[in-house]
Length: 231
Image (cartoon, rainbow, N blue to C red):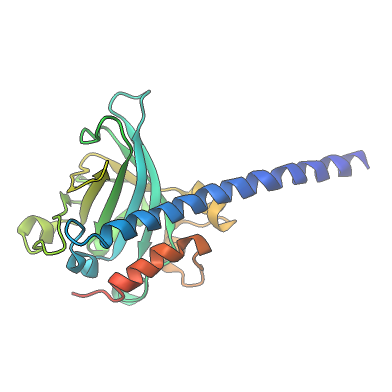
């Protein structure tokens, strides 16, 4: 009886911890959706919508902060969603959790948190980001994205890049290079969000994974702005 009582007590103690962990990841998904909506809906300084139309995945890192205990180091957590279906031609997937680590984000203003949005522009870049730890600018070619809804997206550097990136800090929005930083799947966070072991590839490529309610803003915005990929 004592053993059963101890097991029951342990189970009751674990439940609140699991709920708090899931709530934390839900908040990350919600914040990512809000950042994406703010930037895509910006009338004059947002991301060109024709680039979103050509992209295969969107990555959002809200509130990336400098790690004061590591010189120049930074760390952020966010989400990735990709177009589903053959040749990335279907609707946007449930979000998978991602981590961003960088040697130096010198453009951060006064140590303030910075939001990042990345567009993954081709299949090679998408599969690379989802399958392993990727060094931006090394394993995947990258460039600072052009700013402004009417900005041209036909420059050589934009056309050749696998990843385009932007930042927003203290209201300032700009294309920014993340070369030298690394991205990886945050599978511990995926487990907390979905309640079971799932890799980023499982979430993005397996249609049976349903998005959590916290992803409603994120996915509704993408379906509104870019419901279908354009060549």
